[in-house]
Image (cartoon, rainbow, N blue to C red):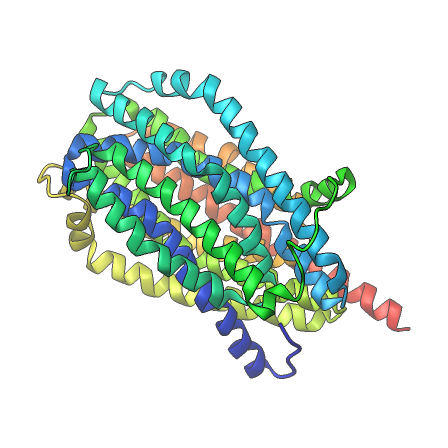
Length: 455
């Protein structure tokens, strides 16, 4: 990161940071996409099982890893405030915390996974695949969480290209392992959808080892001596990370877990409907990578400027990010509308699933438009370390407005399963409006404080 003067300079720097983040996020999502797509080629049952297992895992991962994203605004503000000597200590404390979080996930999952899957009214084979897929995936939890910390450190320095190359390197490995383990090629066992879980877990370990090697060898990272010494565990530093990270993680969890709740509620429908819904959900999650990446880039840029006490510059970055998100949402919405038939056939060859999936994809358009506003604003607020109100607004948007409205529409109108999508889109739109108001108030407050200090 470096200081910029004009709006053009800011836009160019923002794109330099954003584009690698977007490619990285798409790459990470591609692992989940490959799991579902390649499992779909093994059969509708494998598709449904992996999709359900994935829908249960994603909110857990995104919510808990969201806690670790606190590293980004903290390190960004340390860089902006010229406190580089504190970075290694902060990163290593976050690594320790990530391991503890992973262990807690193991323990809770051991006791709750089976009852949770049993609570879903699934066909026997779909139930087995979903459960075994999650067990296989759990092998990669520890490296995935540690990588999240190290990636946040690298991104906060503005070195987003490096994490992009790490992810792109791992994608072919994931695809090959999927091919070998799902379909049983070259002497490997034919595991169907469950094989996708093992393939992804192994890939997470590969990503971690590559990242550690780069941080040790590349001068732009090695100068911070992240692994140079062993630091004692600091409860004080953990508290700082958790105070910022927990609201971030919970806000993300409230958004992603709502789809798991919908999946549970939709278990009353047949396998064809569930598979079609999951296709639309998976592609909507793919489009979500755009506003999410814009959000992450805004956290870095805004955090850097706030740390340097340049609040006007921080506000300019916010405008750039939100405006870009809206423009891209309109473009992707048009693409989704025009090519929804092609999108559906990418996921499945089942002629009963494809037309229903196309219908679900129409509702995904409205969802991603609302997300284009809400996510970038949350990213800007994280740059200010303002996270608690975002948490409350996420809770209200999805669990107070979105899910209850969706349930009513699905159960008491002719919309059926499509009612859930309308409800969630409505909740997200309300949340985006409230978040915009919050950002305005935070920016005004920071600017006022800066003016008073100037006097």
